[in-house]
Image (tube, rainbow, N blue to C red; front, side, top):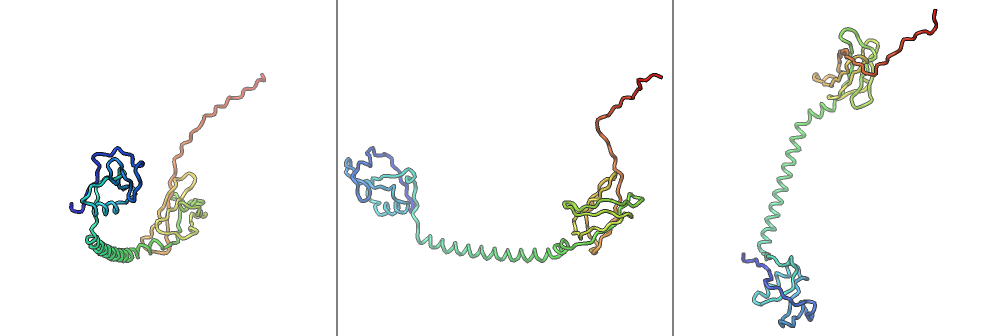
Length: 222
């Protein structure tokens, strides 16, 4: 490429740079009677400028390993064009982002009105618990994940002490019966939900160490 050049050293010099007589740009080599430029103190831009101004001269220099590479000259005109085109792209992207953000928010807001309203609504929950035939008094009713609960009265009726949202889970438990989980739904959008819960008998298996008792025999003879 026109604005590109590479730096490499095919035949490294065996002279010690520290023994050279210091000069303004580096050191003077007594062996080859030349000024050796110290490029180790220059950055990439300074190296490019030096060789651009001394393209017709043979140069001896001191380099770091990472400085022996291909250099790309910067084009100020192209850089200016790229700068303005970059601003144009950035403005376009910003405009697109703002438009997309506004449309997304509008869509989400419109579509979520009814959903948010339903989730925020709370209902009073009450009902009756039976074993399928008779009412069950003393059934424990607990809101899952909390310590809030109540019990059924003598007639198996209950009213939960706090209002509940759609999706809340009530756990019904009673000694000798299978515990049941009821998820609260409000299909009819009423303020009060009436539940009828039937508990089933639970099968129990007892495991443990068998205790064997000896029969007591009197030592007295009659």
